[in-house]
Amino acid sequence: MFDKLKAILVEELSVNPDDIRLDAELENDLGINSLELADLVFLCEDKFSIQIDDDDIKSLITVGDVVKYLEEHTANA
Image 1 (spheres, rainbow, N blue to C red):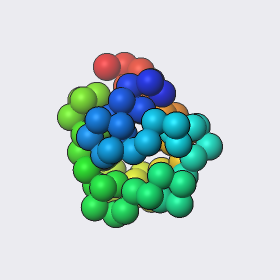
Image 2: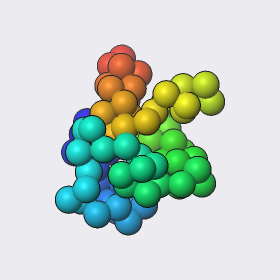
Image 3: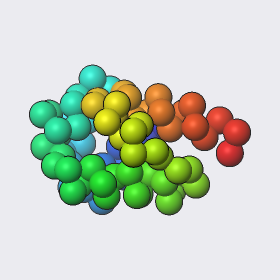
Image 4: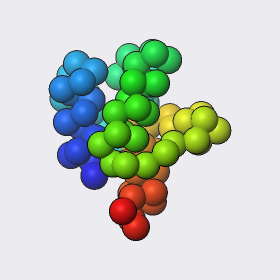
């Protein structure tokens, strides 16, 4: 799941692949702003056929948070 998310971050949001670690914060370490976060949510929803609730988005602080969320919500997909 990490590799899939990393590919999205690099290809769609132009994040430097060397900066992407599980403990990297989306905003502070990767420079993702609120608009780009919305894009990331949309891309993940589309790629993984899930729906991410607005309340859940607030808890996605690090790359690891996103990976964990995707793993938990795509287990049955």
